[in-house]
Length: 377
Image 1 (cartoon, rainbow, N blue to C red):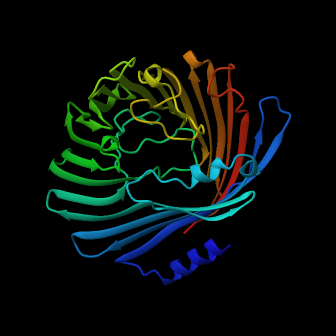
Image 2: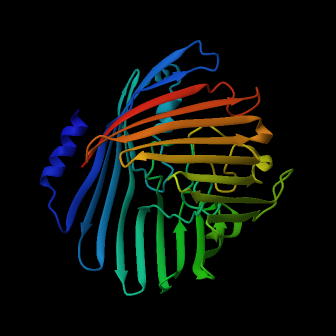
Image 3: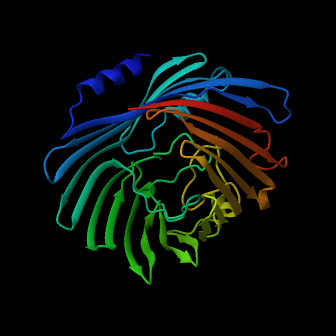
């Protein structure tokens, strides 16, 4: 309630033009059901997002964005590591704080965007916590060296940010050169890379190379079409700067997919992922929604994803996503629908079902069912 009152106060004081404040407030109760359908756990989340934009001049602007979350979960008592996980910050600067830690309740604020932006002619420079989106695919992004995210974390459409210095030079209407440096306390964990994006024969193409957490990275991607189908893909080869005992030195991560908008309005997608880093080092998973590394992007070596979204009306749509991890003997199924109630209010239902063999990453995860009511301002 305090977060909501603070938000509405900021909105009332924000002026149009050079300063703007947008965001949303949502409540999302959920039920977690174990694999044997014997135990049901009730959770709730109140999620407030604030997006501040401040235009300082024709060339300079400032952006600050924050996630304020109030969570209720009985598992906080039994598993106290949730506090460290939700309150952790992987950036060079700690911009995450836990402001409530009471038994089953946890309050967390995270600044996932905090940067200044300078634009002049063909140049753009951005310094601070920002989203560096080099990914092309809709599910898995091997080219996304700076901001990996979890496909299973549907409640984070903005996706994480990285503490970085980013230079962009636009060489044409459809081409650009980027240089990005993401420092870390331990220099071996830093990331520095260059990307060149351009267009040839109606295909958007990109090439990248750089240093990724004490590994060399070389890759590229494309986005175009084959007939009436969209065709996208990206791949990155990672290679250790120093050889490690009993560890394969190099590995490839690659994904490609097709999509199509049918005459009925249904949008369909199929994507295939090869994660060569899985057998190299395994998946260090705390929670299924934990983002993995770009060189080991999934809990298995292979992943196949199919999804479909159908609009029944301008305000009502339904979707279904299925992901299979064949070598891990695991399957993920997520049905959902969304309804726009008014211009500012939205309702959504999402289900997540995890099933797999005893050794799979989804074993024992069961299912989760979410409903959310969201007010945007």
